[in-house]
Image (tube, rainbow, N blue to C red; front, side, top):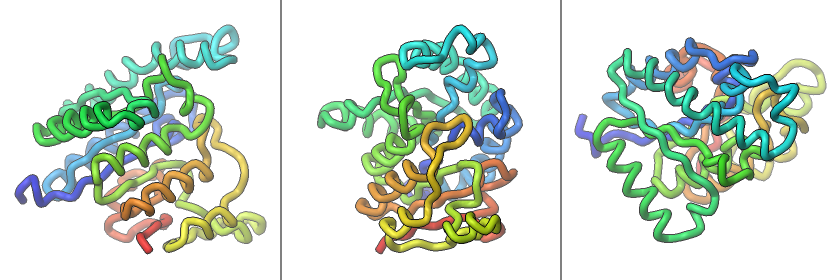
Length: 258
């Protein structure tokens, strides 16, 4: 298949997925993601937005003395980011996949010149078979540390790059109906046309490692739907979660264009 015929997917990976809900980044999960990208490489090109820098730093820094305020979390992100990239690079390289790092902030999307630079750089990387791995530049920006866990950043990036599909990998089988959550059943909402309706269903609260929870993902999906980009909310804790979702072998929430 010609490269121009490939569909472009932005995969947003949350901290809970990368750690498999533990206190350490899971090399096995990153390898699982790499294997799927390798399997799908002939039909799809991938851009990754990855959280996890602070989670990686937890493996090296005593959080009792560091990590209680925003400034310390920014320092933790600076410690963890190169380790996070190293883990991606090592695992992907074994599969013959090449990675690249892009650190962005919200301010970058407010200036036309910055947006053009992002667009050009990431497109050149993808054209040359380098997978961009994007994270917020936490050293100079704090938005995603405080809330969002890179969800809005993923939506803004996907819109700028005109991707075909955004997949949010978290720790649930998509979004569950509120009534089923109250009954302890966890029934997944399979397909949604109106993002506003999802606001009535999502539960309050945030995940243990991440800062976003489902509310920030729904907010991101609203941005994406306004730009005619389909969104999937899948369970990244499951092995082969991208391939299985594409094959209809798993339960997840699909937010399609109106």
